Length: 186
Image (cartoon, rainbow, N blue to C red; front, side, top):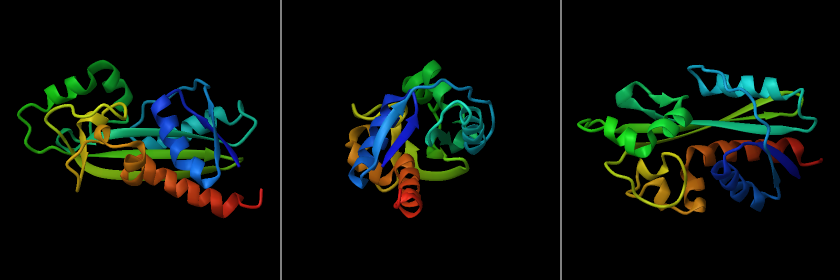
């Protein structure tokens, strides 16, 4: 089964490919620019993206939007995570967190699949923001995010380890289960 993933993020594509390939899914990367609306909810951003792309792509496809939600900041950066990462990076977010003892945070991923209808899959992983960058793997805020129950950041984990517990891994699991259930005869 071939599935088109519309993303410019190489890290997201690599994680999704590693997750879906063992399930017999051939993941194809599509690079189509589309507007991301400013909204308070990842699902709203994904739905808009799917609706904007649906008339421009003639095959089923999916997109992903993810964010880091820092509880001490009321969920910021959340839907603005990509922008905040580009402007501040891990170093800037750690600077904002100086003197903050309550470091709980969570990553959320929303995958939207379009095959004539919109299908939404979500994944969340809770954790905390570390006090320094650790690890060389991953991308984005991975070097400062420590999932609950672990002492290592996402950037210190292999892709396989991260996919087992991450927000995107959980959304991909829900998506792959749906694919198996609904598309096995195609």
